[in-house]
Image (cartoon, rainbow over all chains, first blue to last red; front, side, top):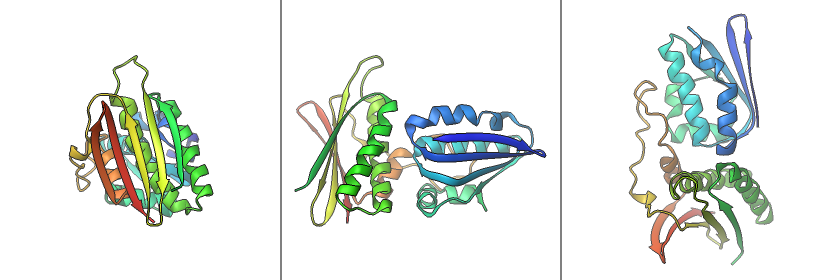
Length: 100
Length: 136
């Protein structure tokens, strides 16, 4: 599992690549830490290479969304595949995240 | 009946072995990638619960995972010798809440319920035995 964060022209682009299982979650959370404290963050999380996510990964996404909203920002999930989208449906994440 | 099994310890870093186990079994049994992904997720949520809560901190414990296939379904049996815990009695998370009102976490058992067709629990000879069934 690889993760990265870039800041481009005031916008944060995070990329998730691989399988976000519970074993990978704490390292990914550490990499995504800059997203938690940014003021008015405009965040895109690119999921085009994300192949799997467990609830430990969902917890990270929800934490980012909660802190972004609390800091006056927004989070968009980009290119989520159908299998992962079905997990978002089961958990109601489709109703709280924006997708593109 | 075809059967595959795996034994893990209560160390979350071992969860990646579970992923490999499900993938190799799915290849052997010709399961679709989508079905394998759903089984893996349900199994991971159940196994992580055991890893995190069944044994006291600092005490090494084991988790046995068995997969069975018959004509109608895949059965998963997860057993441990930890504290008595019946996940079938845990309430599902409220998935209708807004982001602001949602607690962080608590989705694991809700996901298991969504992903499998049957979930049952028994305590036998000091073991927690959780059985999940997913129709083919």
